[in-house]
Amino acid sequence: MRLLVLGTAAGGGVPQWNCACAGCAAARADPARRRRRHASIAVEAGPGRWYVVNATPDIGEQIEACPQLHPGPGRRDTPLAGVILTDAELDHTLGIPRLREASGLRIVATGAVRAALSGGLRLDAVLGPYAGVSWAALPEKGLEVLDGGPLEVQGVRVSGKRPRYAADLDAGGEDGWVVALRVRDRRSGRVLVYAPCLAAWPKELDEALSGADCVFFDGTFWDDDEPRRAGFTDRTATRMGHLPITGPGGTAGRLAELPAARRLYTHLNNTNPLVDPDDAGHRRLAAAGIEVAREGALIEL
Ligand code: MLT
Ligand code: MN
Ligand code: ZN
Image 1 (tube, protein in one colour):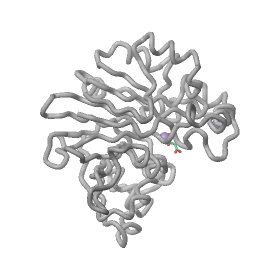
Image 2: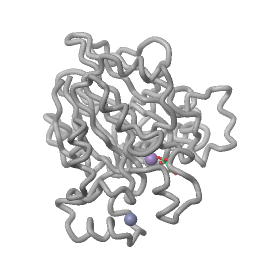
Image 3: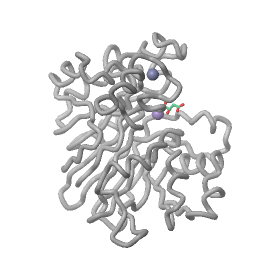
Image 4: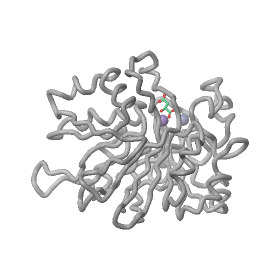
């Protein structure tokens, strides 16, 4: 299995357009080292066929930054086979309308995420006259085989947090609002888990992580109090739907114990000290065998 790291930032990116904090200012001054695009990866479903996991507002630039995703050989041929969604948050879905030039768009999502995009954002209606959308279910029980194999995907529910725009939406009883994505390659048996938004660590996640060869984890906040200290909310990281990296309830300690070959944090908020590549936190994580995902990396499992 091959995957590409397209972006590693939480909503807003780094720099965020309306933010003058130290981290965002430093990213403006030194974009080559410090800019981070919205969190996303691409997985190769077949030779030269890639699914993006979450379609971010940066998707156009993310495609241009990766030769594997460039169009060709025909004028409108694209290796982009579709989009898999872990949730319906705007930072993970606003890239979908940017793909309207496609001849058709395949979206793999849970029922709740589909309800949010169809009923809340009205994406079916908006995109219908451009690229028609075809939906495939991201199952929480059982597996969806992508394009006939070899990749099989599954959603593991990690939160019931709805996007704010869908707070009152009638989702027809669907409630798989946020999932971790588990991808298994039937040929090699290799397993990837992609979990950028983790409000809790249910036992189903432990099952999904067992035997995983590579895991991407919610690295939004370094510690639970960070969002309150930063002054943009009175809620803790956990209350905002993101388990912190360190401190009580932190994920780094548990990640360090995983046998997974690679453990990477992604979805970093611009308040997270790790957005500074020289921050001591990187060395602390490295000592536990954990990395912060690097944009542009091609990972082969
Ligand atoms: C999140 O990761 O919690 C969401 O992206 C927040 C938001 O966009 O409001
Ligand atoms: Mn987010
Ligand atoms: Zn900022």
